[in-house]
Amino acid sequence: REAHAARRMGAAAADAGWTELRDERVSEVVRMVQLKRDGDWSVYSHVVGVLQGANAGAIASCLDMLAAAAAYIGVVSNEIGDLLAALFALDFTRLADSDSRILDRFLLFAKNLSFSTVSFVEPVVRLLAKAFTRIDVKSNSGGACMLLLTEMLRTYPTATSLFNSVLAAHCPHVKREPALVISYARFLLEFGVSSGSRSIAQNGVSLVTAMVVALDAELNHVGSYRCAQRSNCTANVPEEVLTLAASESSVEYKLDALLHAIFAFLAAQFEARHETTGIDYPSLCECFIVPFDELVVPLSRPHYSVFPLFYAVSFDAELVRGLLDELRAAFRNASSHFQLRIANVHLSAALVAQSKLFPVDDVLSWVESMVSWLHLYVETSLLASADGISIHELDVDMHGLFYHTFQCVMVVLVHRCREVFVTAEHRLERLRNLRLAYLIRSALNPLRMVSSSELVSQLAQLLSRYDILDCSDVLAHNESVLVPTVTLRKTKNVLAFHYPFDCFYLPRSVPLLAATFRLKAEHAHVSVCAGLEQFDDSTPDCEPDLGVYVPLERAGSLSIPIPASKPMLQASAMILHTGVSSWDESPGFESFVVRPTS
Image (cartoon, rainbow, N blue to C red; front, side):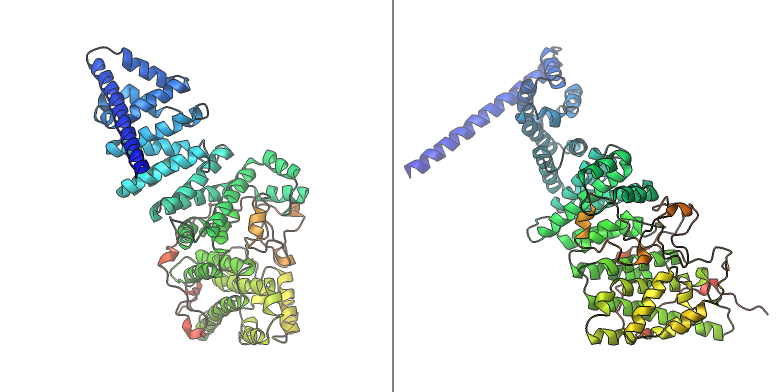
């Protein structure tokens, strides 16, 4: 009891001493302002000069005094503009290296000022956000600054829009220095989670995704491929190769470092998903869907831009299913532009084919749902033909959605053949029930229009080997089938197919991605082959019957105007295969049909 009483007396004395010291410091600031009002600027000018100087010890003492009187400073702020300007221009992160007291005292001053005077919330947020272009969020300075931002957001919960606008305003351009871009991107991601605000997290993820999209558009993908071929880029990259990549292509190095930071952040968040006190991991993944829908899906040929969202969901099969539901719902939305629907089926096929954690039964369910739509398309086209409507078979403009979807099904079956075909008999029975013969022998003749002859050959071998379907007669007949060189719209009648995987040549980030994705090409139809010199910029993604995927010079180009898609989050989830009647949609070729005239 005596010891407890002594401690209480000591604490009371310490509080009394601190109160007395604080009152003394406040009195000093009040006296300084009063002298300035009376015309004596000597003390005021001395304090401003100290803050503008380089003496860390003197600056720490001034900050001690000003932090105690922050509430009074907020009241008389219109009289001490020079002092406040010197304070907000103070490079406290650099000075903290000389004197560790400066960081704590400056942040205490900023906290007291913003908490006592609401008009200083925005200047303080701007100051702290700008600091993250120079400091790392995991450093002592970064952790202290982010903690203060979190406290300010909780104190002013209605200031979310203010925080979002400030964070967006200070987001550096992707052409800036790599360290600056990466540091700010890591801050946006970390602060979005720790803030506990869905709006802040969504804003940060959208800004980081925009960085990836911009760098992906800037990157010379053909040059990146050739550099990777020269250095034989693999998951285990020697240090001299990393140095070469950093010195030869700053855009490639910056994109690689940015994706590595995003992947490392997502992996850490997934590992700590049961311990997080901010945004939970499923909600974080949902934050990636909105910029993916708005920025990535409308791209004509996205490459590296697809990986932030795909990597986020790749840790959990349930998250993969949720994303596939979003992509399939967008695909079956007949009101969307057909190019957007094609992009959605490409992306969903890539995710199904390459995700290591996606179960094979779910793969078959995805195949069944796509084949169900293909059957409905063929039946609708037959009805249109019976009504005297010319459907113009073998035209990629009119039936491009059908051909792309069929080709995606082929890619998935060939990529996952070791699991789909060489497993239980009930899975083979599910494949036999797909009625692929009805599609292959239809007037649309998808095997003739598929870009890769190698892909066609491999699928035909698999179907024949497991007694599902014999395509030899169709393949023999297709050798004499002539395909029009131009479409009804007078464009090149070639099915340009883009597959976003197997061309990941960023050495720092590929080891993280390879843990959850099959990145190495196992089949020739998705391999990047040598001999790119024979193709020019006008070459489509895949020339027919070459079996070669060719990355284009500007693979992330935004030059093709496509109407903005409706947000995926508003689309209803797709019903999995229960028969053709489960698909209540228009196949989408009616706008191209030519009706007979009287």
